[in-house]
Length: 437
Image (cartoon, helix red, strand yellow):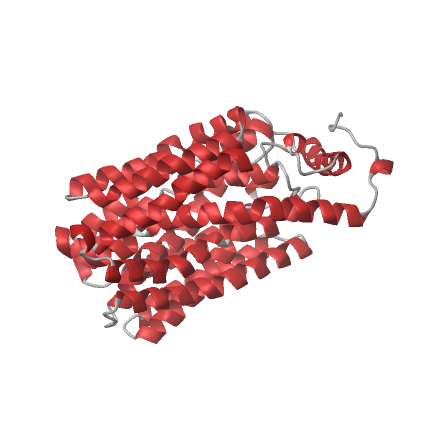
């Protein structure tokens, strides 16, 4: 069957289209969300491990911030090569490989015994995980056209706050209840137990995922033709297909800077929220986990609504600005009122809700610009450069906290970066998504 062409008369009905996309969504998105939950948990669970291991191993806040952030150096170096390999060998094998190897390294972090070994494990984790997030963003463009992409991306990125919702209480419970078992510290059990699910999911991905619409066995021929028609229409509207196009397109670099600004805000919360809440006087690690779950629970609802609103109105720029301003407000409130437990939780809720909604909508902007290998390279460039904020943000906050005994100046700086990113989207973002009809 030739699926690259589809006459208008062959499209049966809007009902068939809705049914086909519903089938694709239910087949792919829940599994990808589950994978990303453990991906993000393995990336940021050092925020909880810090509550024990920093004292036991004698780390300063600056050393912890550097270790948390050095993950993104390995991530940055291997991001673009990883996404190009995915484009060549297929998502099934490459995503499975990424998950298995990052799960192994995450578990091995339990053998940290010095600042130096902590740096090594975190760097290797970044190397192994490189390409997962942009690989999934690229993978979704194989199945969904731009007009449906913000909502689907929202469902996928919702794994981030879901990870916080589940991971916070889980991490606190593990560290409180497993400490001393088989002579291992609670933070060691944390790394071991939260890394193993990624290995299992990676093995499942090797047989569960399909590389493209054409290779899926759970779609009938008419559904394949219909879905491929919409993807082919998008490709005709895009003019940038080569890797060189993706890397030399100036707007890709603007989008990379924008993403850097947004992730600086996100990782400020992800790595330091447990410490912020602990500093208000809360002693129980499990209760700290419960409190960190509140902002993430609200963020899940907000970002899905934001994605639907953006798709329904076919508008990205002003949605990004509004939620970016909300995120910066949350960061500012965290700096001003972080000494009170419930004020800190409220500020974090505003900030996490805003930043996760901003990132959700934002990813519909760069994916509307590029096609083919340019998409693989361009998306990876945006993500890898943007994730350098994951290095800068925790390290900067740790350094400022050591120097001033407060996170306030760092949080205000992150708020300013988020506002800058949102303004750049308004200035340089497309006025209307491509293939909107």
